[in-house]
Length: 92
Image (cartoon, rainbow, N blue to C red; front, side, top):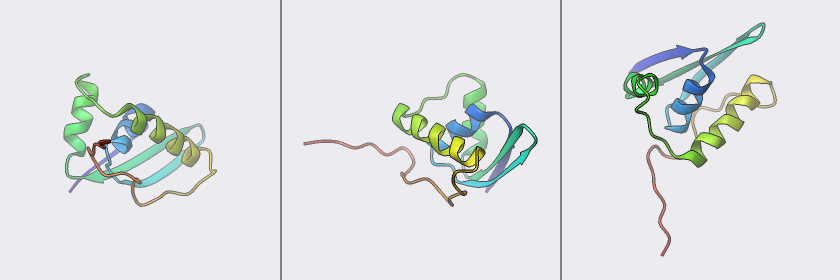
């Protein structure tokens, strides 16, 4: 199991939107640190920094709202996301 801690908000949002479990959050004055743990976390972080990352925009926007709620104390850390990683929905 790979683990990563980051103060880079949009990396945290990307990892969260990809279904990597948020395992911790701490706030030191004006800076939040997010901790994630999962099998592909290092590969996803590398794709983020290499600018090759792709994600579902709706999941990304939802993750922005959820992580901001955690940052500003309006919610507590949840053990995981409410969506499965890399799922697609289809309509008939």
